[in-house]
Length: 208
Image (tube, rainbow, N blue to C red; front, side, top):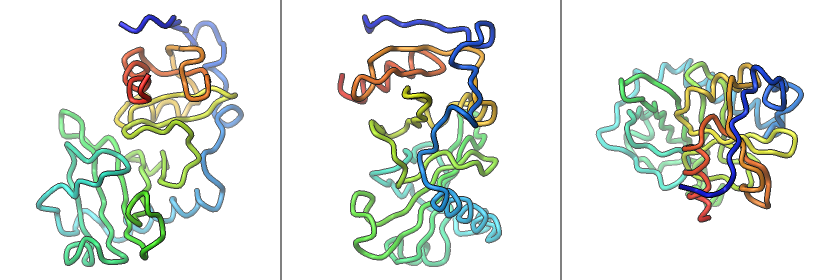
């Protein structure tokens, strides 16, 4: 077990840092313009009724962005013909153990040179409600695949992409309980998470 000190903070009762409303405390990881673009991308795939697109016969196995295991994928006409064609769009529904959708990622292939780290794919991840969770262009120092980082007053909240607590936090700006690990994050920043296992796995992903 990790020997770093861990404090369980009962934020609902103590009314400490965890209770600060998201509107005041959580810093946006993207610009207003970028936020609007991600919202418009969501609206686009909804208008296009993506669930009627061609179901992928195999996992696209993107080596970047949200992990695509335990998912189902839908391809627009371009993607169904050539996954590497500019304008190809893939919508990935992330499923829990019961087969319920817990998140949606939209991927769009852009012109060569657009974003080499993601092989020129733009991607954005959403809650099933359409709330933007993260995108490939977010300002997220210490980002690790499969985790969402949200900065609050100089500290980092860490969530798994599939965590049910993520939606609660984005909506309410607080959790009933959390785990805090001072100095364990990138650059010595304090980490907070819904549970100790999430923090352990995130710190392990950092290589610590």
